[in-house]
Image 1 (cartoon, helix red, strand yellow):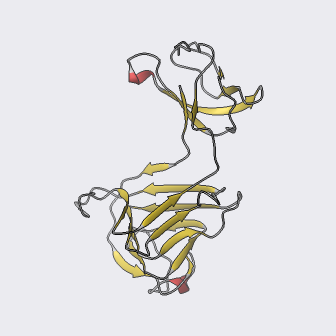
Image 2 (image 1 turned 45 degrees about the vertical axis):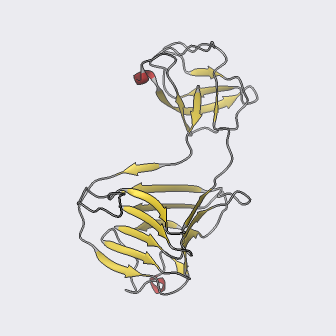
Length: 220
Protein backbone atom coordinates (compact mmCIF):
# COMPACT_ATOMS: atom_id res chain seq x y z
CA UNK A 1 0.00 0.00 0.00
CA UNK A 2 1.45 3.36 -1.06
CA UNK A 3 0.35 6.79 0.14
CA UNK A 4 1.46 10.12 -1.34
CA UNK A 5 1.84 12.91 1.26
CA UNK A 6 1.36 16.48 0.01
CA UNK A 7 1.29 18.50 3.25
CA UNK A 8 4.60 19.56 4.78
CA UNK A 9 4.43 20.08 8.54
CA UNK A 10 7.56 20.59 10.66
CA UNK A 11 7.95 21.03 14.41
CA UNK A 12 10.78 23.20 15.80
CA UNK A 13 11.32 24.05 19.46
CA UNK A 14 12.77 27.24 20.94
CA UNK A 15 11.54 30.02 23.26
CA UNK A 16 10.54 33.57 22.26
CA UNK A 17 8.94 36.54 24.01
CA UNK A 18 5.87 37.95 22.26
CA UNK A 19 4.69 41.37 21.10
CA UNK A 20 1.40 42.21 19.37
CA UNK A 21 1.03 43.31 15.77
CA UNK A 22 -2.14 43.62 13.64
CA UNK A 23 -3.05 44.40 10.05
CA UNK A 24 -4.00 47.94 9.03
CA UNK A 25 -5.29 47.10 5.54
CA UNK A 26 -4.98 44.63 2.67
CA UNK A 27 -1.36 43.95 1.79
CA UNK A 28 1.53 41.53 1.52
CA UNK A 29 2.89 39.90 4.68
CA UNK A 30 6.38 41.24 3.90
CA UNK A 31 5.23 44.84 3.30
CA UNK A 32 5.74 47.08 6.36
CA UNK A 33 2.72 49.17 5.36
CA UNK A 34 0.45 46.18 6.05
CA UNK A 35 1.19 46.22 9.79
CA UNK A 36 0.43 48.39 12.82
CA UNK A 37 4.10 48.55 13.84
CA UNK A 38 5.33 49.46 10.34
CA UNK A 39 7.63 46.44 10.60
CA UNK A 40 7.53 42.95 9.13
CA UNK A 41 6.44 40.36 11.75
CA UNK A 42 9.09 38.16 13.35
CA UNK A 43 8.91 35.01 15.48
CA UNK A 44 8.45 37.29 18.51
CA UNK A 45 5.15 38.77 17.27
CA UNK A 46 1.60 37.68 17.97
CA UNK A 47 -0.03 38.56 14.66
CA UNK A 48 -3.71 39.32 14.06
CA UNK A 49 -5.21 39.77 10.60
CA UNK A 50 -8.26 41.93 11.18
CA UNK A 51 -11.68 41.24 9.67
CA UNK A 52 -12.04 42.81 6.24
CA UNK A 53 -8.30 42.61 5.47
CA UNK A 54 -6.58 40.18 3.08
CA UNK A 55 -2.90 39.53 3.79
CA UNK A 56 -1.02 37.70 1.03
CA UNK A 57 1.86 35.26 1.33
CA UNK A 58 5.03 35.25 -0.77
CA UNK A 59 8.32 33.92 0.59
CA UNK A 60 8.84 33.63 4.35
CA UNK A 61 6.15 34.56 6.89
CA UNK A 62 7.36 34.46 10.50
CA UNK A 63 5.40 34.98 13.71
CA UNK A 64 4.89 33.61 17.22
CA UNK A 65 1.16 33.14 16.66
CA UNK A 66 -1.35 34.03 13.93
CA UNK A 67 -5.01 34.85 14.46
CA UNK A 68 -6.89 35.17 11.17
CA UNK A 69 -10.11 37.17 11.47
CA UNK A 70 -9.77 38.35 7.85
CA UNK A 71 -8.11 36.39 5.05
CA UNK A 72 -4.64 34.84 4.73
CA UNK A 73 -3.82 33.48 1.27
CA UNK A 74 -0.94 33.21 -1.24
CA UNK A 75 -0.35 36.12 -3.59
CA UNK A 76 -0.38 33.74 -6.57
CA UNK A 77 -1.62 30.22 -7.33
CA UNK A 78 1.03 29.57 -10.01
CA UNK A 79 3.48 26.66 -10.07
CA UNK A 80 6.51 28.91 -9.49
CA UNK A 81 5.11 30.49 -6.33
CA UNK A 82 6.23 29.44 -2.86
CA UNK A 83 5.83 30.47 0.76
CA UNK A 84 6.86 29.22 4.19
CA UNK A 85 4.83 30.03 7.32
CA UNK A 86 6.57 29.63 10.69
CA UNK A 87 4.33 30.07 13.73
CA UNK A 88 3.52 28.43 17.06
CA UNK A 89 -0.13 28.18 16.08
CA UNK A 90 -2.64 29.46 13.53
CA UNK A 91 -6.24 30.18 14.49
CA UNK A 92 -8.84 31.01 11.83
CA UNK A 93 -11.83 32.52 13.58
CA UNK A 94 -15.00 34.50 12.91
CA UNK A 95 -17.43 34.77 10.01
CA UNK A 96 -14.80 36.54 7.85
CA UNK A 97 -11.87 34.35 8.93
CA UNK A 98 -10.32 32.58 5.94
CA UNK A 99 -7.13 30.58 5.38
CA UNK A 100 -7.32 29.98 1.64
CA UNK A 101 -4.52 28.09 -0.07
CA UNK A 102 -6.25 27.26 -3.33
CA UNK A 103 -9.81 26.08 -3.92
CA UNK A 104 -11.26 22.96 -5.51
CA UNK A 105 -11.90 24.95 -8.69
CA UNK A 106 -8.56 26.83 -8.60
CA UNK A 107 -5.94 24.75 -6.75
CA UNK A 108 -2.63 26.16 -5.49
CA UNK A 109 0.11 24.85 -7.79
CA UNK A 110 3.15 26.21 -5.93
CA UNK A 111 5.08 25.04 -2.87
CA UNK A 112 3.60 25.61 0.60
CA UNK A 113 5.32 24.77 3.88
CA UNK A 114 3.79 25.39 7.32
CA UNK A 115 6.15 24.96 10.28
CA UNK A 116 4.92 24.96 13.88
CA UNK A 117 7.65 26.45 16.08
CA UNK A 118 8.32 27.18 19.76
CA UNK A 119 8.42 25.28 23.04
CA UNK A 120 5.46 24.19 25.16
CA UNK A 121 4.98 27.43 27.10
CA UNK A 122 1.72 26.44 28.75
CA UNK A 123 -0.68 28.18 26.36
CA UNK A 124 -4.15 26.64 26.28
CA UNK A 125 -6.18 28.22 23.49
CA UNK A 126 -9.63 26.74 23.94
CA UNK A 127 -8.89 23.04 24.35
CA UNK A 128 -6.31 23.03 21.56
CA UNK A 129 -3.08 23.54 23.52
CA UNK A 130 -0.32 25.58 21.88
CA UNK A 131 0.62 23.69 18.67
CA UNK A 132 -2.22 23.67 16.18
CA UNK A 133 -3.89 24.90 13.04
CA UNK A 134 -7.55 25.37 13.99
CA UNK A 135 -10.75 26.83 12.58
CA UNK A 136 -13.66 27.97 14.77
CA UNK A 137 -16.57 30.42 15.15
CA UNK A 138 -17.52 30.34 11.47
CA UNK A 139 -14.01 30.52 10.01
CA UNK A 140 -13.11 28.55 6.88
CA UNK A 141 -9.88 26.75 5.94
CA UNK A 142 -9.42 25.76 2.28
CA UNK A 143 -6.32 23.78 1.27
CA UNK A 144 -6.27 22.56 -2.34
CA UNK A 145 -3.05 21.75 -4.17
CA UNK A 146 -2.11 19.98 -7.38
CA UNK A 147 -4.32 16.88 -7.69
CA UNK A 148 -2.26 13.69 -7.27
CA UNK A 149 -3.32 10.11 -6.82
CA UNK A 150 -3.41 9.72 -3.06
CA UNK A 151 -2.61 6.00 -2.99
CA UNK A 152 -2.18 2.75 -4.93
CA UNK A 153 -0.91 -0.78 -4.32
CA UNK A 154 2.32 -2.43 -5.41
CA UNK A 155 1.66 -5.01 -8.13
CA UNK A 156 4.62 -7.27 -7.33
CA UNK A 157 6.24 -8.13 -4.03
CA UNK A 158 9.06 -5.72 -3.18
CA UNK A 159 12.01 -7.34 -1.45
CA UNK A 160 14.35 -5.77 1.09
CA UNK A 161 17.21 -4.07 -0.74
CA UNK A 162 15.17 -3.17 -3.84
CA UNK A 163 15.05 0.42 -5.08
CA UNK A 164 12.13 0.10 -7.54
CA UNK A 165 8.42 -0.51 -7.07
CA UNK A 166 5.87 -1.77 -9.61
CA UNK A 167 2.39 -0.29 -9.14
CA UNK A 168 -1.14 -1.50 -9.87
CA UNK A 169 -2.27 1.94 -11.06
CA UNK A 170 -0.50 4.66 -13.04
CA UNK A 171 0.45 7.69 -10.93
CA UNK A 172 1.39 11.28 -11.71
CA UNK A 173 3.90 11.52 -8.87
CA UNK A 174 7.20 13.32 -9.48
CA UNK A 175 10.86 12.97 -8.60
CA UNK A 176 11.65 14.46 -5.19
CA UNK A 177 8.23 13.74 -3.70
CA UNK A 178 7.94 11.46 -0.68
CA UNK A 179 5.74 8.39 -0.42
CA UNK A 180 4.84 6.00 2.38
CA UNK A 181 5.13 2.25 1.76
CA UNK A 182 3.04 0.65 4.48
CA UNK A 183 3.91 -2.57 6.23
CA UNK A 184 2.43 -5.79 4.84
CA UNK A 185 2.38 -7.48 8.27
CA UNK A 186 1.40 -6.48 11.79
CA UNK A 187 4.64 -4.67 12.61
CA UNK A 188 3.98 -0.95 11.98
CA UNK A 189 7.71 -0.29 12.28
CA UNK A 190 8.19 -1.84 8.83
CA UNK A 191 6.33 1.09 7.23
CA UNK A 192 8.88 3.06 5.19
CA UNK A 193 9.11 6.67 4.00
CA UNK A 194 10.75 6.85 0.58
CA UNK A 195 11.82 9.60 -1.83
CA UNK A 196 10.96 9.20 -5.52
CA UNK A 197 13.97 9.26 -7.85
CA UNK A 198 12.12 8.67 -11.13
CA UNK A 199 8.80 7.52 -12.59
CA UNK A 200 8.60 5.33 -15.71
CA UNK A 201 6.49 2.72 -17.51
CA UNK A 202 3.63 5.21 -17.98
CA UNK A 203 3.48 5.91 -14.26
CA UNK A 204 3.46 2.27 -13.16
CA UNK A 205 7.08 1.96 -11.99
CA UNK A 206 8.88 4.22 -9.55
CA UNK A 207 12.52 4.20 -8.58
CA UNK A 208 13.37 5.49 -5.09
CA UNK A 209 16.55 6.89 -3.57
CA UNK A 210 16.60 4.46 -0.66
CA UNK A 211 17.01 0.68 -0.50
CA UNK A 212 14.01 -0.97 1.09
CA UNK A 213 14.76 -1.99 4.65
CA UNK A 214 11.97 -4.61 4.66
CA UNK A 215 10.10 -6.80 2.20
CA UNK A 216 6.54 -5.83 1.28
CA UNK A 217 4.06 -8.45 0.04
CA UNK A 218 1.81 -7.57 -2.88
CA UNK A 219 -0.87 -10.26 -2.51
CA UNK A 220 -4.41 -9.82 -1.20
